[in-house]
Length: 81
Image 1 (tube, one colour):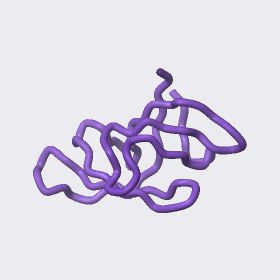
Image 2 (cartoon, one colour):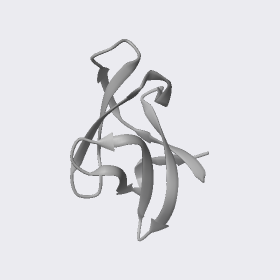
Image 3 (tube, helix red, strand yellow):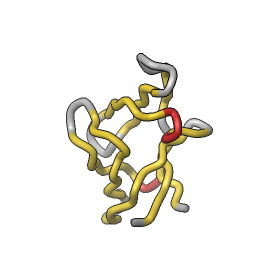
């Protein structure tokens, strides 16, 4: 699977080894808690599942609070590795 990174807002998690992150998808804001190792420089590591019509389907490292672990985000917020 191709890898990429998306820009996220990062806050402290409940434990030292985790972070709470949020970001805007195509139609809503998503929030999830991830391991500290999944974020760096304000960006979250994701898997790239596909691209279509200016959006990218990404696999997140964990489920969001509302939408599982696969979400669609605007292409502009994705850095491909």
